[in-house]
Amino acid sequence: MMMHVGMKSLCSKFRVDHGLSGTWKEGSNIIEAREVPFAYIWSPALVPKPLDWGTHIDVVGFSELEGSGFSGPPPADIDAWIKKEPRKIPIFIGFGSCVLPNVRKVGETIYDAAKMANVRVIIQQGWAGLGKDLKGLQGVSFVNGAKGPDGGVTADELDLKANDFCLVIGRVAHSWLFEKVAGVVHHGGAGTTYAGLKAARPTLIAPFFGDQPFWGQMVNNAGAGPKPTAVESWRAKTLAEAFLSMFTKEQKKAALLISKAFKRENGAREAVRIFHEKMLIGQLECDLLQTDVARYYVPNWRLKLGIKGFVIMRKHQPEWHKILMGKVHRYKTCDWNLATMSSMGEEVKQLDLSQAVTSKEVEVALRNLKAIMDARGQNHHSKDLLDVIHPDPRIRL
Image 1 (cartoon, rainbow, N blue to C red):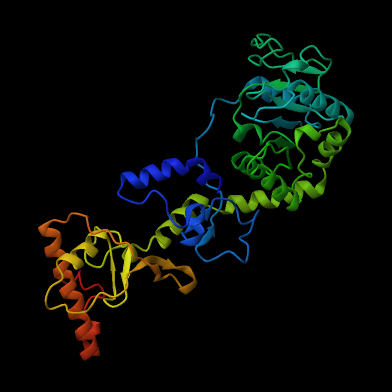
Image 2 (cartoon, one colour; image 1 turned 60 degrees about the horizontal axis):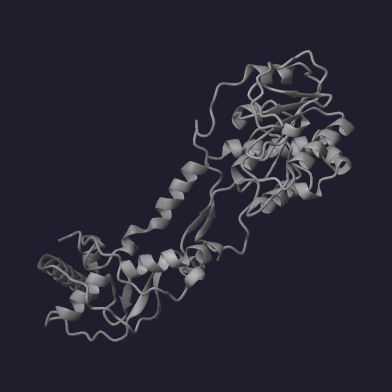
């Protein structure tokens, strides 16, 4: 619905430019109404497919492009800071491109909560510059390149001997960093959620919009993280409690189980397999012209026809084909409730015959029509011929 509202005018213009009506019956409900095959790219280990979803919907697993995203070399200073206290592995906190309502207050809440819980934290600044206002506070260090309160880049080298518990950093590859920390706190984007759980890290999600509250709740339902809480609701005491919960055996075990499931899956391969399985090329094509997409079904003729195929049958119907047309219905490529069989939809009463066709297309269409009629006649008279005639009469021509 949200996509339809935002892109309605573009969709209408596209349809008009391609000779279609500017509006259509299903509108925002078109995916559901036509049961278009749909694959959700998340792990069934985290969110199993609901039992009431149709067979045209699949959950294939997360898809990851190896080497994608920020892939700079592992920063030696951050690595050294993490390793200097091996018994106090830090928690990562970062919100990427999200805009924070009060970046100073959020940074101070993280600082107070970490101090209260006696844990170390790594704050990634992101677009909002989270943590920049902590410059100068006791126990806070900045890596070379992180931004300070004035927006300028810090040039000082990281002092690894400093008695600190909070490190403010810039861009770092999550695929590397998440393997080094004890837990992750982020906005709940699908990709970041996947990265954190794949690394087997308990995850606290502070959602902002869209699908982020959903991911926060799913992680919490799986036992792999605290209850999701928006940054506006953060308080030092409750955030400190959430930090400490991420070190419990229960959350660690749940995150590890999900990580193992992720690593067994191959979302990209499963997505490609489902794509080809649900494509059903033979059911997409017009019976008379394989290059024409089937749009109509004529019950009297038992033919599925594209726009050109239909025009040819109306304007060039041969004398030997004397069957009356009768009603014309919208063709449904696949009815997933009927074991992927095609079916027909509502009757179509306004039919456009203005589509131009070439003499070659007419020749091919009528030849295929003759082959189909011959095959039906042969099937009616002799069952023995079924074994030697290709099921698609066009192929045997």
